[in-house]
Amino acid sequence: MSGPKLRKALVLLVSAGLALVTGCAGDGDDSAGLPADQQNSVAGGSGSGDGIRLGILGQCEGPFGGFHEDVVAGTTLALARFAGATPESSTSALEGFSGAEVAGTPIELVGIGCGDDTADRVVQEVRRLVEQLGANVIIGPLSGDEGIAIAEYAKSNPELTVLAGISGSQEQTLQVQAPNYFRFYGDGAIWNAGLGDLLHNEEGWDTVAVIADDYSFGHTSAAGFIADFCGVGGKVTHRVFPPLGTTDYSSYIAALPGPDEVDGYFWAVGGTGTQAALEAFVNGQGDLSGDQHAGNLFFNPDLAQALGTDIAGAYVGGFATLPADVRTPEIEEYLAAADETWESIPGSLSGNEPAPPSVAAAFGFFYGYYTAGVALVEGLEAVGGDVSDLDAFHEAIAGLTLDLPYGEISLDENRSGIVDVGLSRLALDDSGNVVQETVAIVPGVDQTFGGTFSPDTPSPGRDFPACEERELPWEGNAIPVVDGVPQS
Image (tube, rainbow, N blue to C red):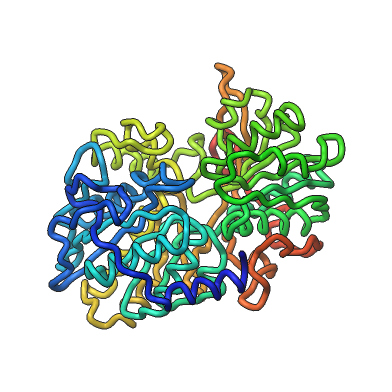
């Protein structure tokens, strides 16, 4: 289900009044990160009193369950840096924090929601946080369909303020347009801006096959690449959409053309499916070759390395952060702050084993929730900590321009991020390991994607957008990056 049908189903889901689920995670509770029906009450989370009563929507189960620690840590770091918060544990963000305050207004963590990438579960969780625990601000969610559901919930609950976490579906802002829902990052289409231009005009790809998860984020990510590649004159020959969470990709790989039939493949298969899908390609179509493959944010060096070094040369779309070869004083300060806030945290990039917090902080899941936390702080500062006038508070948030470690972010008229996109390539370092190197930055991309998308166009899906040439403002205008330094 996608597009208008999905949004209609989500509206019905929100309005149907799902049963509240008791319990929560965080604030020192041993059950942190468990599903709601397995959790105990949050310590101190009555939701009473003045100030900000914060609920964080994470995802502790499903394809992206490994990022649960990362996203809670992202918000916690923002509040530790700029609101005086103190984490309750030196080795896990899931234990919560205390002492956060902005302009005399306290920020209390009332609970951590546990999603599983489905709309029904995340609505259960947000209702528990808001209607049972009294949250008046939500940060999250993580994934595509979740974002559409929470945007619809926000639209039906105007007294709530929602700062999206890192959910990359397009519809949550461009179509739903809830005035109390804010996204300080790009969507999945934005993150692929310029990739098609690079592959067609610099690498000589004329034809490509696309394989993407069959849900809102996969559709959005594929839509951005298709609009970009076709916009500059390329042709998409096949579109294959395996369901999110697929374990056996063999039939979907068989539906792709052979390596001698197209110039390349674009992958937008994420979560636990990325490696399984790539392994199925090797088994069904032959070895991976970097000059014939490209992917979105999940196409990273760790997975590629596990499949062999021949993947070096493949291009990768952008995400909320930049690859490790780009280092500025602002980025270094941000990463150092993460290491000063905890001794270690079990982030996704360390296999959920204890590691320096900067490892997780350098990836976009952590960073998206960090930007939301910064936006909350700066929004509160803009109104002097007075949130009694929600219209003024929301107007202040909508007007923010955040000066962030990985670049400045402002919002468009639908309260969605206008961002710079970093494109990269997998390469071999001197030790023969696959690493990710930034090759270009595409500045100032918004979710209309050069006029491709609007509130009146269909939602990204299996058949939209069509493969059509159109002028794109960034064609030929990407800023080259050499040895981690933008050349402008």
